[in-house]
Image (cartoon, rainbow over all chains, first blue to last red; front, side, top):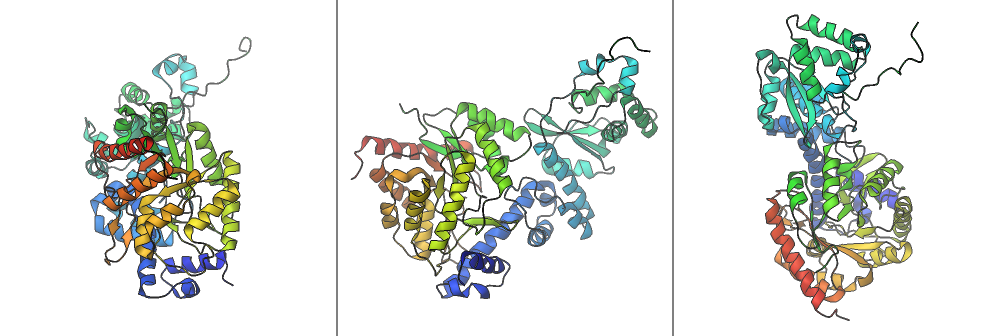
Length: 255
Length: 279
């Protein structure tokens, strides 16, 4: 039966390289093969272009190696929906599985940048919000990272390499700061800020849901000589925290 | 002085700041809604800022109206949210399929224009229009393969779709030129047969010759070709002015280079506005 579904089944198989099923719908001649090749190439290029757009540092680091693995990924893990903004979630894992660990790390940084770009909007906590807390309330306050914030600790020179490939200039004041990265939204773009060991440990603890007092302890455990006040102030200025979910004011006198 | 949209440009993130600052009579912008279906983020904020200054059109590539299944409910809902937020003056889609059974093939795929296909596409267009609460424009895609099994030519199919669903037409003149060259029909006759009153928007784009040297590809990576400008002039002389868009997706030039092409389209529209419309 030459119905629309049967045609589309056959066309999908032709996109995968098997054109035999399409014969009932082809007008004939060598032009058919050429025309089908245009569709096949456009679909493959569309998936490759989407991965290259979503993982630009990895694509720039090794264009040929990236393209080969991206074409495979596109074929084996085609997009599930027409919005390609976040396509390729598991692509860094494919790079790693293929032994391309350096490319995989670059792709993981690209992915964090992308997630920061498309995550939900929310108000950020200001310095005044934290200053308004009493010392005991401060220690017990849970301050989750802003939904548009991503951060990671890589160590080594991965982050520096990623920054060069993305043309991102970031002031690094110590070697320790070179290992981490904080992606935040600034002026309509995503900036990659330096993040030292203490700052990473602090944010990581906040992300896990522990209150600020325990997060500070975690930061000091990771970097005993850290100046926590400076670390915390820089995170607030960067807009790293979502507006505070403060405990409701106690009703009546406390026991 | 025309206060409606005249000639517009497809908008890419590289050009947000230029688009926001630029002023030109009738200037408007078009984006693919699939690139804005995020929870939040700066691109939505940029688009909102551009929308405050210029008319906007949402031009979908992923509704897959010619798939033999209803449009994806989640995709429709996401589009509705964008339509409500940005209040575009036009919402458009393609006479093609791309998503089917949960897999998206990033292209505008062809199908035999049978009577059964017309039933399906008309039902899908109606579902889309019902979900959005407004009519949409349907665009002719570029074609590369001559299929058997058509009950309609493309103009006949689009005309029937317009009559059945009330949808308008988005005429991509470059696609007509490309399809005519690839499949061997007369582009002027194609354009002359379109129902004038249904046409709500016109697209122009550049094309390229396939590596094989036989097929033209709707590549969107080059300036609009002279034969396409000539087809535009003839179409506008027949139907009068309609919003015209210059599309560029690849090999993106500086914003002002695109504005030069945009000014040429605006001049063609101004000329068509002054001339009497052909009967």
